[in-house]
Length: 229
Image (cartoon, rainbow, N blue to C red; front, side, top):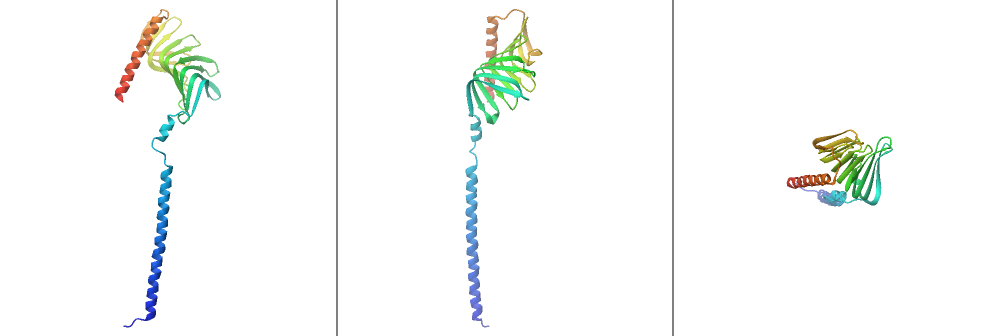
């Protein structure tokens, strides 16, 4: 059986056509692959470095000295904090204070109801909590004074509380105990675990006893925290 010459030519031309298709497809596949690799490279470059966000939260984005921070609720001032130094962490809605802190708490009518003095503290705008640490002294307009090592004020509930050792001085008595809760005026209060009552006036020996006992409690708390770590 003979083979026509034209058939040979058509067959050869078909092979060349197929080869061209393969080359074109291969070229496009190379371009697509290159684009994918380029895209992956760009995504990798925009990914945050592990731990970078946490590190940024540890660095304050604002600092101030010898000034006053004001917190309000529904347009009314609820708390003023006078401080020696302030560090603000906007990502955490947190302001930290040190070098001497004085907190002024106001009632719904704008009247000053109590003050808190401490070595340091912080204000969390998200949780509505104000905390004072280190030789805390809270005093109300009714004449009651509270001594403790740390105290929290909940702006939302208008409550003062602590789980630390406390000494409460009224016009007639001095009371001791652990754990305390009160309204912001120190008018309605409770000592969770009372440990003593004295009708004698406050003196320097009582203060020394208070500080020594609080230091011992703090030391035990730190040791317990270290063991847990």
